[in-house]
Length: 242
Image 1 (spheres, rainbow, N blue to C red):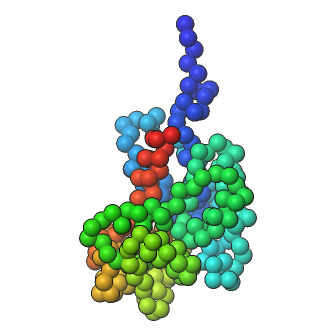
Image 2: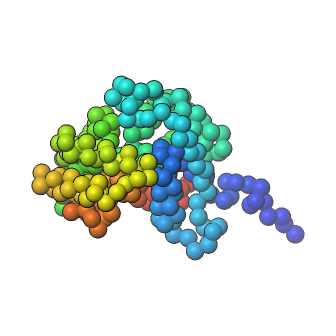
Image 3: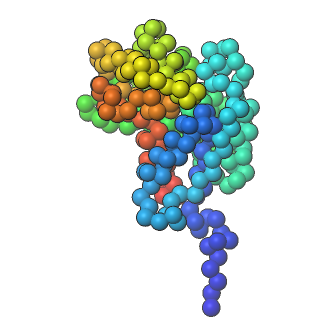
């Protein structure tokens, strides 16, 4: 008679995936839901093993990037270390703005992360009908040039809102975080997306994890690309390859 050591051997159950979340809490829940939906599983046991470190006390990434707020790097390092200590094989961050700080986190925590931004740029470059992409993102993500840089490297032209429209985008993002997004602001966000299309955008990129919670694919004037969905699909592929 042989004993079954599966329960005692975590590696036999597949790799542990880390999620660095809490930025914000609703976006973290949304990403985990998308990861579940992306996983080809018929039973609980066929889903991925996941550790979520959701710390809403991470300083505002947007304020930090524009130089008006506390550096979130130490808190991100703490979270990444928690995931590493838990045995995560790699992690993802359910926040676009945090990607401006993840290279510094990697310098302090030896744990691989998968970039939502690079995954998105790579995906768009493979679509023959996409020559340019409209970005709905925080001020900070645009200021840091996170998507603009990656898209340009992959041969996709980024299109950004004008200042007035960008103010509307930020209002919608913070309204989602506060849980009080109303129909008027939702309609205003759709109008911003339409403006990006008029500037030549072939797709609209929800380059902030709150955007899909504020505008649906049906409301978008062009295909709405959700980086969180693309990242979830990449996580499943990567985890199954380990």
